[in-house]
Length: 161
Length: 161
DNA sequence: GTATGTGCAAAATTTTTGCATGTCT
DNA sequence: AGACATGCAAAAATTTTGCACATAC
Image (cartoon, rainbow over all chains, first blue to last red; front, side, top):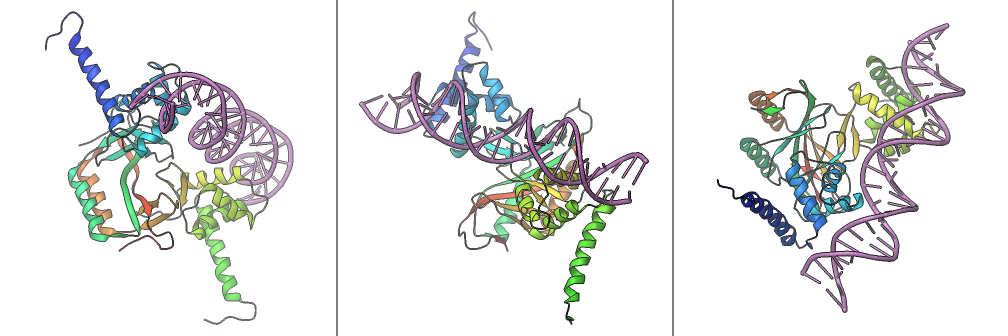
């Protein structure tokens, strides 16, 4: 990969990402605003299932005049439009997730970290279970599987192997 | 079953239940108070995964001077001692559950109802999954599986068959 | 130009806290 | 008696709301 003096490769990638984000907002039927763009970008880039407050702190860098109320409203709007998902922790705190495919969460009670885990086999087992059993009188929106626990060594990461 | 004039059978059952509740509190190492007794009784009797506010309204009947702060503190104390479990809804609201065995929850987004479901096979699949896969650097406290959706007919009940 | 979105500040809601008083063991 | 629990009211934290102004389309 070659970069010219203006680092135009990097610039292009960044601009493309920005454009991608804007396309997603537009495709969902929402007007594209700077606030919405930086908020959706934040949820994607932060990589930490952020809370509203954390999104707010992050986006203030690129949009200092943004208000907390806007972040609350925008995050919920994005959930309604299916652009992001919300995840409630074991403690009942709301966090946001840019990943929309089926996956589970590991939640650490002492550090408040959320770690994704993916397992196709487990997904299938759960989906098959609900196909087989039939839930009556309910239109299923989503299924959440969460493992809650305490991190043993705070300096190491949590993972499933 | 025979009842005498004073309905002593019913009285005995009620007293026994009350005594059972008190034994649970005492066994957990907590002092037995009237407030704790009626709160734990409420979570068991309400049969609806109540919120703190709902517990508060319920226990005021038998304990009018109780304060909301006490219900907040007591519910968390019971969770710490393993007498009840807490369940966070998809919207991030805290609810309490007297059932401590492995089971899933169906959560209805429009009525805020929580319905239990039990399936031994699914429990085993999930438990085996985490045995097999090994979660590293985490002391697992509990695993929650929740199906979130909207009730179709508000007059009928939700169930898994 | 019109509909929609944003910022701001106030209000509503939910939860926690400190402390004097009360109660269990 | 001593440790612990409760009630109360204030404070803190979280989330929602109304409305004037700004912006996207």
